[in-house]
Length: 510
Ligand code: ME8
Image 1: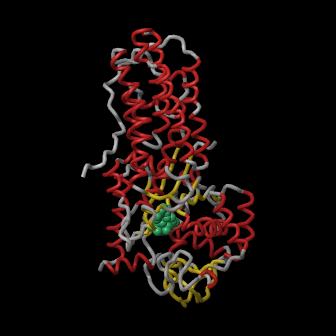
Image 2: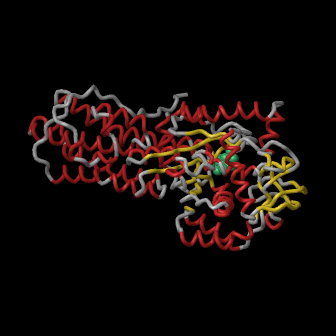
Image 3: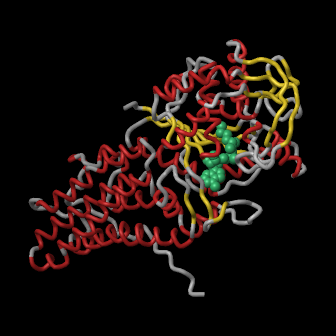
């Protein structure tokens, strides 16, 4: 296993305010980044905003602003979202920054030098909403496959020789079977490439909000070639000798929604191979969220506002719901009922009560300090071992972005622990066998410690509070400490008064 990890979100268009979909993608990356840091890896987690192109230029005009002031304003909203959701990105890139412009022009120069770019004329369909060229056979009833309207475009344009790369792309997919996940999406991409690729228009001349083509400023570079390059700009490209580039490229994963898989799994690796740059190790395309069964759209007025969501249910609760409710990769539906069910059943009742019961009993019956255990019996050992095994189990699930399975494995141990409390009935042992009660309470507190270390990637605030309540030092909260005998709770350690960390959601009486 490598000791570094580079994870990226898509860079979001600044034509609009952030909504739950943007928060979801960044959340998935945040959970991965936190997990890999827990696992002792050096992480680079990148997010940012996509600020060029016709769609953003049109939005700026509609707001009566020049594109630069408009993008300055809207980009801030994406930063604010990242702050409000406490995302742990290491870098936030904007495509209007100098470091990015430099990287895009350098990549262009490479493609030109390798003979992969030529000048011609584009005549075909374009969708501004998708910022995508669509082939004739992809247009149905005047609409792109995404449902976006298209317009006929005819203009001088540079082309990238994508058609020449189909066979090498297929070879790359074959040699790297998990380059594209999930598998069903991979198969779609393979079929698309097997169908043959057209050369791709990579410059526009009918507007100027973009990065000029080096040596031909009548053209601006196609916004997707511009945007995709952000993943390289942020690690210092074209300075390939820079420490960041050497350490972090190729990226371990580009996380994207299924709507933009083609750009990431076909165009991007082709650009990179043509420029002599290694493709990323993985592109994961996750599914889409609907709201109470309906497609989320501004015109339907059912956009889920990320700040409101967190204000209503709590940040850890929303994180848990989004990562647990849907098998990652599939589409999901947000509903108030499902959200409340998850937060009350899994968090408040199962995990929250377990911790609260265990810690309150320790506080009351063991003089507010970690109790001294006697010999462990088979039930104690089974529970402690199950919790220790979570290190490897969650690691395996996170390697393939199966957040739901990681959480399922953790909650299986939460369930074991709750059954253990009921079976051991420490409140009875208090009178009949206080030494055994102390062993049971130790086992429980130690199990909560192990659980709380692992849950940090998913419900970070509550996990940190649980670890504080167990007086676990900040430097002993890594995955390596889960089953480490030296990291076990030390008998006699004083513990603060426990407090619940997962409040229940109570419906308004009205
Ligand atoms: O496509 N459910 O930016 P964008 C889940 N700038 N995820 C959703 C979603 C939903 N309902 N709606 C949006 C772009 N997303 C380009 C990317 S990258 C080099 C350039 C998420 O602002 C999902 O990740 O349209 C989707 O891929 C992304 O937002 C699109 O964001």
